[in-house]
Length: 199
Image (cartoon, rainbow, N blue to C red; front, side, top):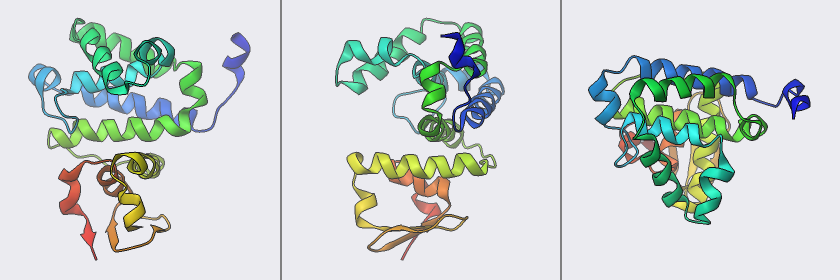
């Protein structure tokens, strides 16, 4: 539908920019890191995380055949992409960054948090750091709030106090930290716990 190309969706450009930043991260990894490096996603290497976020551009083909079994769909995506060489996967990623699907453009406000979180999964898993862009940090925090509702309910049991520019959320014992660290913790990435202050 060509007319949709003329529509600008909220956070679409931020999504494109974060996709390009993730590709830059992947390009800087050694072959060993890319193929089998540790990430915060259990049993997934950086190439697997990249494949997963690429497949989010194809929700019907990727998820519909698996019904409500989201984990099975995610694993099927990863296994399919493992048959591709690094060069081929990176070529696909370049296309993915420059030409997001219409569904991803329309859902950019939601997908930005998911993408930012998975980018951090790779960086943190390998012991690398970056300055998280402000819009991405906020999106990661929002993503953590949403995921926590069905993953671990932390959002319902704590008052979350970002130390870098967002209003507190919730009630209960306080947890303080950056938006990124709070979002990662809410989403079950317990390795960030040392960066948080539990009051």
